Amino acid sequence: MLTQITKLPLLVILMGISVLAMLLPAGFAWTAAEYYEGRVFLYGALLFGFLTFFLAIAMADRPRSTRHRRHLMALLGLFVLLPIMLAVPFHQALRTTTFLNAYVEMVSALTTTGLTLFPDPDRLPKSLHLWRALVGWMGGFFIWVGAIAILAPMALGGFEVRTRFGARGSALDTRLGAGHSQITRVADFSDRIRTYGVRLLPIYTGLTTALWIGLVVAGETPFVGLVHAMSTLATSGISPVGGVSGGVAGFGGEVMIAVFLAFAISRQTFASDMQHSETPSLWRDPEIRLASVLVVSLTGFLFLRHWIGAYEVDEELNLVAGLTSLWGSFFTVLSFLTTAGFESQAWEASRNWSGLETPGLLLMGLALIGGGVATTAGGAKLMRVYALYLHGLREMEKLVHPSSIGGAGTEARHLRGRGAYMAWVFFMLMALSVALIMALFALTGQDFESAMILTIASLTTTGPVVEVAVAEPLSVVDLSDPAKLVLAGAMILGRLETLAIIALLSPEIWRR
Image 1 (cartoon, rainbow, N blue to C red):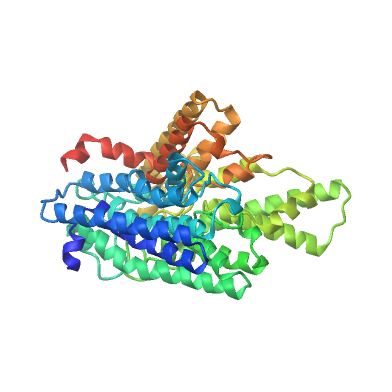
Image 2: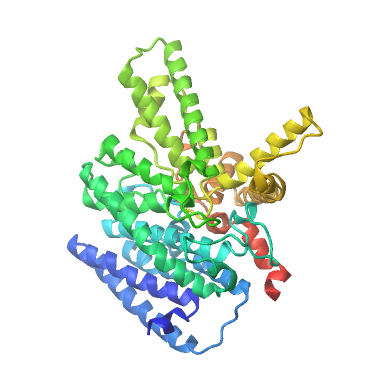
């Protein structure tokens, strides 16, 4: 039975998983005395359960193509079509919004963007907050599996930077742990998805449970702690209380969240290196080292800037205020670098202490850099930035010593050469994507600032940018319908990345 299920098309399997997921908010709604919402989710599970069952029967014996485009199309269908099903119970349970708003909300959750059309937490019942967080959590897991099982062997999603192409268009170093050296080279993508899904699900679930328990121990309520735990592992930034600052866990809860945000910096934190069977040193991972440098340096910059600002206005300088400002800067910088977008409860105190405005441009820059390859974080990815850094460093060395030969091994030479070239191609495509999306927003009536912020928030999957990057948060729900469609498309583009879309349209991919 299980074998027959795994042979179904990926989108049908994901529909079945979503049907089972609807039972969780249905049961929670009944315990929270939200009986109408509970019935909506239960009826939705029954309706789409029958639909999924009939689709499974109809497609069970159909021959499936082994071409790569089928799996890229499945990923695209995951973010375009699946939110239609996920939006039905949301729309029916809320009753005071349009279906388009519900669809955009589900696209935002599934792509782990976390940009909400309902910024007032009191407007949504608890069961809908749980549904948003659960959809985002599932989206994060799908990204984990899809990146390693589908994008890695096709050298997409950031893997193109480190991939050395042996066989035509195939990555040779995309293994998850010991004992899987042959999967990358010979296994069908469906087998890869099943293998990596089974191996990663206990890790993903265990990390979420551990963080949930930690938040509850820190003083958070179980419901809010669960939502924040799922949102942290998925880097969706979804919260039922307006962010971690609205919770009751305090700084202890923020420390817990900061520790688990490390899993969005590098895949080495939850999966062994894909080039070696032994477990590598985390500090030797370039993504972790680059993220550490960025977080520490920018935190120091903001702290010194705050300190100088407070000194200039002759405010009282004391140790408690300084440490509060330091932690607020550290947590917020780390959160936006991993594209979670959580704002520390000390961030407001830090700004008030300094008397300076919110550095929204800096936060958007962090979101553009993003987290690690094959993690739930969005953005350009740290590995691409690292490759360009190595290339730039080597070029400056050649200016001083034109006849020098670059060393540091084969891997470093590859990153400085082809890796940097692929990273530069991606950044050019991302710049074109930003220009195109901003132009589309401008055609829908948005001014330059609003168009830029909405574009950065969607392409980097960092929805909270629209609330913290400007003095007055943007009202997404007031956008026109065409602008909301552009927003949904931009979030999908930001999640899949432009290279994957171009690969999907490439004739070579369609022949493979």
